[in-house]
Amino acid sequence: MANIKSAKKRILVINTKTARNKSIRSRVKTYIKKVYTAIESGDKAAAQAALLTATSELDKAASKGIYHKNMVSRKVSRMNKAVNAMN
Image (cartoon, rainbow, N blue to C red; front, side):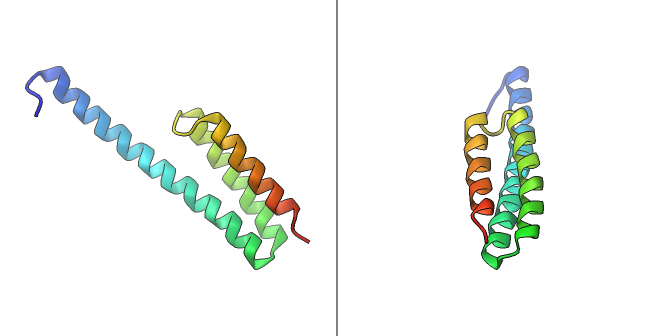
């Protein structure tokens, strides 16, 4: 356990950031899951709507530094490809 005041503060700050990042990651995963669920059910309109919100959430997470921009780009590209492949 830290004894120095600044080290104690860093522990508190890290715990706060970790909780925030975990919350945002969980939220993003939920939106991605909604896209693939809509694709599996065959509802193209719902899939496109879910894709729009998922893309927005991924971009927000990337801008906050939670995900790397290339990873976000790859995920969005794959989801777009899957939605466009629907009949």
